[in-house]
Length: 485
Ligand code: HEM
Image (cartoon, rainbow, N blue to C red; front, side, top):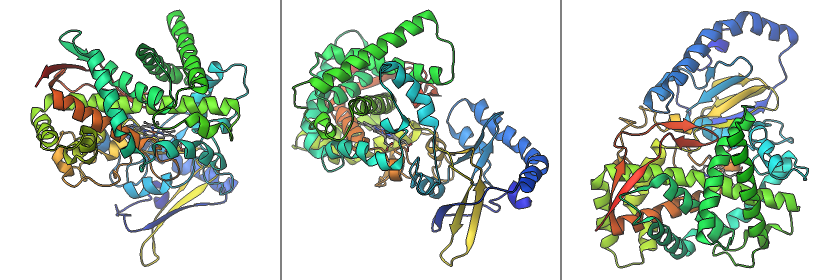
């Protein structure tokens, strides 16, 4: 019984262990009732305390990371209808993310969250089409996953990004010029959203513009990400919101239709060409929508947060300026190889991690088992069919035992930036983000372009809050003031 209550006592490192998940038969009726009546009630206070402490923080900063029980590998949360267990242990997160979201063959996971959250909005966008979970990369079965991921990876996988540096630089310069000179301060929130949407629209999907269309698309995406959650939680829409929702859906329908029919050859290569043989028309549309949805706001909000930090840290701007001025190579090549920008990126995505929690739901009762080098089982924990396992990159990134003074912005903590970031901001394994190399490249190039030409001051001077929607957002608008060098 003690093991059920406190399964991972004492705290142990699972770093060198082999961790696997296996299906186990459901508990017998007798055991189930014994657990429900005698064991579960004893866990309720702990669940309530952890949940309350997390909610009370309202923020994903250090206290939230500390609110989870340090003795546990998985901290159970309290909810009236569901059961959640959250982990920040790097080895466990890696082990969970190794598996597909849904794999009827191994029967381990069958995650329904993305389908529940996003499919209703997609059905509103294409009401005349029958849309199943398998039509959409974020909710499909394992066998479909490659079909959606491969064409994207082919265009923006790691080996391609160096080739696209010049195009990204040109776009960054254009976006910056278009927003410059309209007053003292520029909204970094809008600037970065327009930039990341233009990258997807123009360079990946060949949307011919004009430029102001990318602005319209970026606003529609911004609204849809908020409305999607509202819709999934069945919150009522006001008349104004309903109108904005309908308009945003129409803008996205048009953007996708344009991308499907454009004769322009996108600079990164044609995603439409890559998918049209293998997918039905609705699967194609949803794939184009996914690249917009997954690729715009995430990259934009990291860049926005990074610009805010840069504006508060002139010494970091100076370091980058010295590095870019010292080389005669093209700017995009300097950006791609820059150690200072790499460190800045790692530290910014540590403190602002858009994919703040990544969920997986077991398809049946499963057991997580960690075995050490001597073959001894050093940790195991059982999960029921209806529990949700939450990997929490944003909390792991602020773990004070891994990152001293975790709330402090200090890019120098990454003197040797790790090849893969150990708190998994881009997930890992089967569903690791196929856009991560593009995101890093577009952000690095934008930083090099802006720092080469201007010094930056950012507002407000107090760090703004972070709010969790489908992805993490900054709670207020960020402004920047630029002074020509
Ligand atoms: C800083 C920017 C970004 C962050 C932090 C980020 C984060 C993530 C995370 C955490 C996941 C995995 C979710 C899971 O395991 O369930 C993911 C998946 C995905 N991302 Fe990104 N992403 C970013 C940028 C991009 C960009 C630029 C694109 C595309 C152009 C993109 C396209 C995708 C797609 C298509 C998936 C689904 C992959 C799958 O389910 O197999 N992302 N992203």
